[in-house]
Image (cartoon, rainbow, N blue to C red):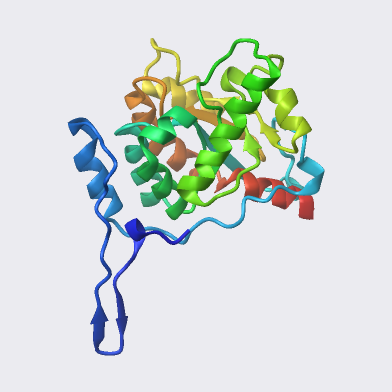
Length: 264
């Protein structure tokens, strides 16, 4: 996903050609401007591969994938962003630890912070659809279509990624969203393991313990970068990563997890 924001300096022989990074023209409040620039100037990884979903998973609901030979792979999924500050902090932690995750984006947040989504893609993370408004309520067909397709379209416009990964807000499967997604060949990605990081009274160590206690090969972990103050999630993330790695787990994106099962 080549982008002006992420061009690198190249050296060809003795001739140095400096690439020019485009200035961000999107409006931000003073709380988010400086961190955005700092992160965008850092080297980024190779862009993520195709987000194509194997045919056997299209129109299906997935909670967990049983990997062949019980391989210790695990998928970290992060919902409700892009969000000022916390998403960038999490991206930095993931990059430092060479971990790829799957971000489920809310359309309204994406519209406000498009450069963060570009950063996610440039660092090799996968992205999915988490609706436009993050509504839980029952919706008619026209509203459901708008919630999903408007978000899918904006994801493509901003990142050039066509995603068919969908996660219903709150995990609600009976309000019309999941039915529409399945009928249009989206893969509905749920989770088998939650950090419970939306618990306002829990400390970061509780999030760590929740993940470590429930970790299994092929598990899909639920965490959040947006929708509220996620500083405790940011604090918990490094230990979650390091402890799972110590247990022998390798982090994969949702598309990678599905591809592994399809090949198995």
